[in-house]
Amino acid sequence: MEFRLRPARDLGLAPGERLRSHAREAGLGSQVLRSLWRGGVGAYLRLAHRLEVTGRENLPATPPFVLIANHCSHLDTLALGSILQGEAGRRAHALAAGDVFFRTGATALFAAYAVNALPVWRKRTRAGEIATLRERLVEDRLVYILFPEGTRSRDGTMAPFQPGIGTLVAGLPVPVVPCRLEGCHAAWPADRRLPRPGKVRLTIGRPLDFSGLPNARAGWVEAAAACEAAVKALG
Amino acid sequence: MSTAFAHPVTVWIVGATLGLLLLAAAVIGLLSVTGRASLALRRELWLRLGSWCILLPLMLGPVLLGRVWTIGAVTLLGLACLREYDRATGLFREYLIVGVVVLGILLVNFAALDHWYGFFVALWPLTVGVIAIASLPLDRPAGYVQRTALGIFAFMLFGAGLAHLGYMANDPGYRPIVLLLLTAVALNDVAAFTFGKLIGGRKLLPATSPNKTLSGALGALLTTSVVVALLAGAIFAGTPMEHPALLLLFGAIVSIAGQCGDLMLSSIKRDLGIKDMGVLLPGHGGVLDRFNSLLLVAPAAFHFIHYSVGIGLEAPARLITGGG
Image (cartoon, rainbow over all chains, first blue to last red; front, side):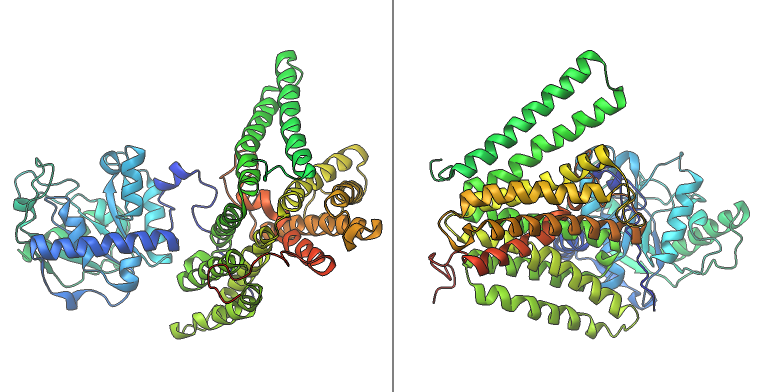
């Protein structure tokens, strides 16, 4: 028997750099902070938004998997995150817009420690970053929460999905779980600073399998189209 | 203030430390003005000095402030060391084991704060036992030996071992002793470096640490033993430890344990294939890169003093739990 010592992927990064790194791995301290945050968010969603979840049986029993949904408000990430329990909850990362959530030190701290977000730099994501995200999804058995429209809908209607989702999952043996959120736009439209109480419904669909698709342009586009159709079908 | 500096050795050590910082600043300033050293070297030297200027008050300050501060600082140091170690070895992914080690570190330092030696000692095997059984309910035998061994190693070094430094604060006369240990390990490092550079020669353990030389190790042993023996002579005057042979032996223990702590961390880093344990202290690396020597010195020095003259024998025990 030989020890398999695997240092943290983010070892040697300066604190600010680490917050924004795709290699960031949470330790016990971060998990304790996050579980407090998740507890508070769960209670808030139940009380203020009477969150109703259907289709829980469609969630894979263990990570890795990817949760996708339509995107209207900042409540979306919180709602999707709140349905993950145990190991899946601990391994969940929201892929969040770097220019919104990782711009300043304070927002980056919040995004990294509360939401466990990893930054996506829209329109300038490098191939290496996608490769790291794909590698970590499988090797570290993570759960990604992401919104393939790329931004929040301003009027509540769903925009076409970007091929970005395909670049993450095409050719990987990782299920993609389509979800549909209703009520989030009314509760927290993009032009409001804070949310207002209002019913939120979350429907979880059957997982999609993209392991047979090529990890190339054609595969990415096909995966994105299939994801979009699956989320639409839940509406 | 008068209590903090009651012992002349405390005044000497704090004075000498401040003097050395000023001297170093003057030398680096001179190098900068005359342009004798390269820009990169000057930057590195200023960075190191800057780190020391923040680090030294954090090290010496709690010792001067009092018992509770000293134990609090040792607790934080132990947790900081654990964080670096668990991220470097990958143990941080085992939340359960890390949680038990954190609890063990907190408890063993609580026992020090309570001045309850029986509990302090009992926690070593008990925490090891809990670490050994903590991950059993996961029903995941793969990697059991690795995670358990890494957890026990961490608790023994950063909990049980390091907490001896804080426990010494239960002796009313702890200040000069703890300050002596803190500064002696730094002197030990500097002496090894200086003798190694001046004399050079055979490498000590080239595969473990390619820069260390036998001459450096012996030079440090000689220097630290003599300096510690002289200062300890002033601290332990009128006690059974006053004998020169005992004082020199005490100095040698500090030097050898300090150098072994350094080599131990080098071995860990070599085994992992990393250069520094962290990035917290610019110019030094991580907390462990700076405090590695103290890990073995704390228990070794504690028990030597404990056997020779006793620690905190007259001080009230079980201050928090009562029943002392």
